Length: 350
Ligand SMILES: Nc1ncnc2c1ncn2[C@@H]1O[C@H](COP(=O)(O)OP(=O)(O)OP(=O)(O)O)[C@@H](O)[C@H]1O
Ligand SMILES: [Mg+2]
Image 1 (cartoon, rainbow, N blue to C red):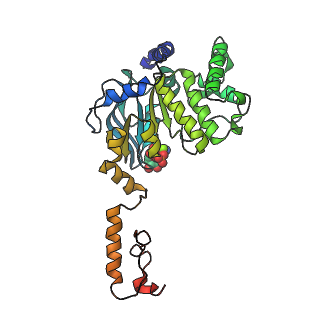
Image 2: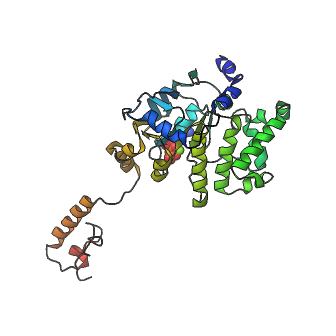
């Protein structure tokens, strides 16, 4: 062992170097250009992958929650990871970031093997994540939460991070970076408040800001916008785009397809533990495999024009069997769907 120990040493500065500022607005077109023309098939190789995953499997009893054969994340891009509830997105994040142990598989970050490395070390090496349910420590202040972020992830290694002796010598630098980030995320006025007093959206902001304390290269966000009121959503979206502008790579889980379309350069789709499709947002959203995965799971969608017409014709055919009924509205929208409101059998004269 201890390859990970060696790997962890002295990489924070390297990471900082790689996240140097670039001219604003250039990164998106760069990311899109780099991904243009790739085959839209699961596991497709990327020109400059920061993360490469092979055969990661995680089972819970008889359930295979994750079974990802191969996936690559393009450096400097915003990649969305989508898929129905229970597809395995969070479990996959947990494996990659050391919060849970995969049954098998391996993955490399910047060419360095990460399987078996502890979560706080993975964070300090430059691959950091946030949680679907935020993990801000409510009895600590906003600033204290930020300073803890400098130690790597809250989770494993967290108690160690609370030992003040480990902080000596870095304290000023850490506080300075925390203050800077709080300002950027407009939380500076709250620095002395308990994290527990923040709104849901502010907690999401705090968690994103805290993740940046380690100067990461890859930021993995698990539903960063979920449950956030619309006023803060735009601000969160802006911050995610900023990460790319500053040279970071973003992998984020999101259910809202408008947001996915708005900010992602590439989309990876998981269903039942596996990657079933990937490609640019527009291609992916019209991919029948993707539509099926969502329909098969839990989503409801509006009727297509053809389906609406078919249902209307069926209903009319049934009605022709004799019952006097009111005319459907001219646009057909008020026509009853079969079985839903069946005047032929029972509603005559309504
Ligand atoms: N600790 C666990 N023990 C047993 N089963 C688990 C555990 N964690 C996750 N699962 C199961 O693994 C599957 C994948 O869950 P996961 O939370 O990764 O899905 P998800 O894609 O993140 O879903 P959502 O969009 O709802 O967040 C689900 O069937 C879930 O019930
Ligand atoms: Mg999840």
